[in-house]
Image (cartoon, rainbow, N blue to C red; front, side):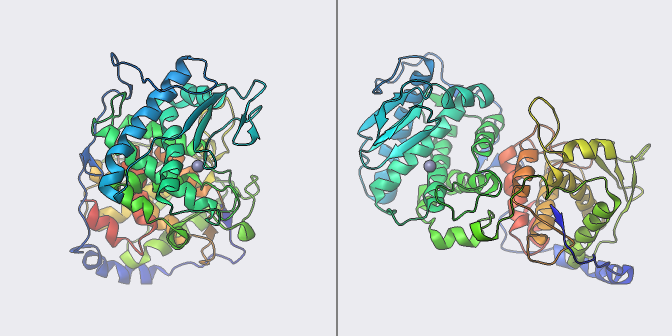
Length: 476
Ligand SMILES: [Zn+2]
């Protein structure tokens, strides 16, 4: 995040008090917004059962050129088989076309000599890809797939292949061509992968099963891992999207099905993409990170929070040191909200730990935006208290994530806020919401919403909403 050069403008207390009177009307009775269910994710029950390969089922009979018949190749072939079965079923139903399986599957080891695939040498090519020229899906069994499997489990391998086959579907539908921007093709492929995983979560896949709680979280963490690096413009050649955009596309497919994916085009992407264009990007090399314990930075944070929630009119809570003995809420870290005293308590050491850039082998660091968003989430609880909403339970956690998204949306670059988002910031929020103990999507006692998918969805709802009414109407 960066602070704007302009000095922050403080909102007069009187104005805040005046707006407070109007808040109950502005948040209540908003019709037309789809209600959310605390036990469901995109209409499916939140489940915590097994995710991964089904035990005791016969492996796929597909073969890959160059394959070694090892565990990773067998996993990849089972994945391709299920994804192709899915498309065989849904392509005719949704697009009136028969699905033809891809012509060729290739497994290679990027650590080896590397055969030519699609006119490219594969030595050192840590990747998986679809090649339209010869209708081939290829994967690196040497490094990419084992690394993903080790980090995120076998379903991450399935996710990568579902994405690549999404490109094959795209090619078959003829909707994209050489002129289509990379980001459009990649967003569609992520979306098609999402639609496949819904079919898996519904229990239809012969080789795999997926829980909508931890199972889906793992897949979204995979998308986070393979996101574009901060500072890549969305219009750059080969751009796939930041984690926020990739997870969004995946969620559209999971929630709304493959026809929603086919609607992704240049105009649609431009309307909602959060990754900045190549020409206005700022490289996030750490220079854009704010010291989160700097009093000026914290003051700027409070200014943006007051301003973004100003139409809802809450009197700002007091901010102080770590809370001891709050009468009516558990102490959470690095920030806590105490309803009884309307106070936010900060543990600055913990805040700095979360606010530092991630480093291999060191736990806890996500980035400055994650730290500030956690503070913002506690402020959002104060807003809910004033408006009379319960501060405990799953709906409170969802409302909190959504309201934190409203704040994030208010500091998008160019809107003149005292703080503004840098490339990579929203991805830090995604990373935080995919951790087991996310505070952004937690109630006043720190109990997190059980589904990462649901957390990110709520945050995005707020991020794309003009104000707080969507959050309070939907997440009840
Ligand atoms: Zn792709």
